[in-house]
Structure formats: C-alpha cells, structure tokens
Image (cartoon, rainbow, N blue to C red):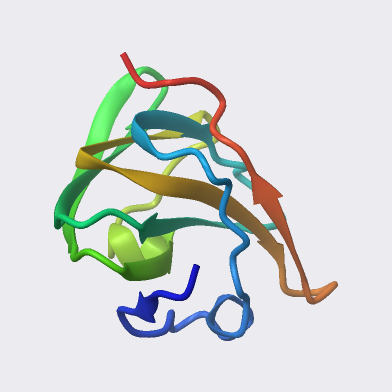
Length: 129
C-alpha cells in the first residue's frame, strides 16, 4: 500500500528506513522495547478510510511514565523513535510501549543499531488490555 509519510524521523537511520507493515490492523498492542545498545521506534500506518487518534504510553517497571497522542489521517504513515515521542524522558531497563488507536492501524516496532546500520522489525508482544 502506498501511503503519505507524515514527515521523517530526526534519527538518520530511521529516516531512511522503509517499514514493511503486517497486513493486520490493530486497535491496541504492547511492544517490549530494548533498553541498551539499540534504539527503538514505532511505525504506524493507517490504511483505512477514517482518521485514527493513536495514543502511546511509555511504561517502566509497571508504571506509566509518559504518554503521547498522534493523529494519523487516512492513508498516512509515521515512524518515530522513543525519544521523539517522549522528549526528555529517559526510560529505564523495563520499558514497554502500550499503543491504542481509535480506528485500527498497522503497527510495527523497529529496533535499530546505528553501529551496524541495521533495523529489525519487531511485532507486538501481545494485544493491549
């Protein structure tokens, strides 16, 4: 599916990465984010006919420490690293991202290693409650 990009990430490796989304759309999901040695990003795509409001919560050690909301218009996509979603927040080792969308969207985690110039897709760990 061809969708419009809602701007590029400020992370150079992420900015040139083209996410290959799963076909399945989700209204909610949880991603376990690695804490060291890599960056972690969320890629979201709205293939549906209606706009979706996507909420992302950063959890650390069982506690919500930050949240962000994005509007994802129909036919658009976005990829953002955790620090771009939550500026100034330094998450600990047990971080998890909980994502909910008012209209189901395609979701994918991206684990990047700038030293190796590699980005690996990460599927949701489980649906969000």
